[in-house]
Length: 393
Image (cartoon, rainbow, N blue to C red; front, side):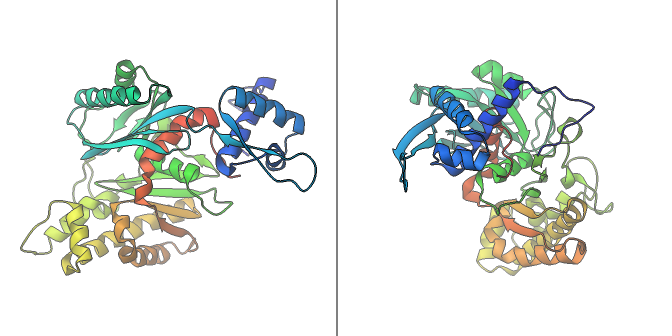
């Protein structure tokens, strides 16, 4: 149950209760469809009359559809309910320093269209390119109601204004991307940090064991981001800046970080760090991208494997910090490095056990890169205004 701040609250009205119950029903259908009204009664604990009123309202609003008739041992055969997946379309945008993913998804998070473009060097060019694609896609699906745009950025976002204020690896001037996109496209825009988007994706779309309410997502790319869900709630902190563990100093004598400090976790454990390790190893031929490291490692190149092992060592050390401080049940790693998870997992898990003896039972897994967690998570951010925050149920 979500805790109530008794120093800052609003009294619930009957309308509040109806809204909460509607979201509960909508989420249950989304997660367990197809469902009968009797199934909803059992799972929600709501009375038959309440379920009847809510489902009829959601059907009238086109959120739910009635489908096939189910089987019954005795009495009336139940009519199954489904989420109307095509009721609304949501645009998801995942901005990364090198490339940007753009997608149009339905209410279930299924991508209808997806494209990857090079990330422009300025936000003005970016907005113009995004608007052009959105207009084209809207013309392809003229009967769809468009519910908004979710944007994932590789940096921190000020919660009240939704301005990105800290994105050292992106190279853009901090600005009001939300207002620019809303003015140009005419759609509502929600902006969130990439790691938080991935955490939402894990909570919304992935099937973890029942009862997992405390999980941490570690995104590994040119930098490192951390998304945190504790007691079923996304942790944003003051002004939405919580989770910037990638810029915690672990060695003051380390290389300079893009944030201006020295020896941050990400300068030792990011993709860029692995490239640096390889090029400093004395190899005759240098590499420019992390993808080259992965290719060489799969071919059995010793220097590439050593660079990944060193990267994994520092990933484990940083994760040990998260385990000791947050005590999650689950850590999910997101990024290209998961393509060689079988190679790095023993080192990562070993360092976590060695450095965090207080919580050795935490489970560490790799996210499915094909699932596009950043994109799906930012789509979930938009969906929350209809479905509410999906608590474990």
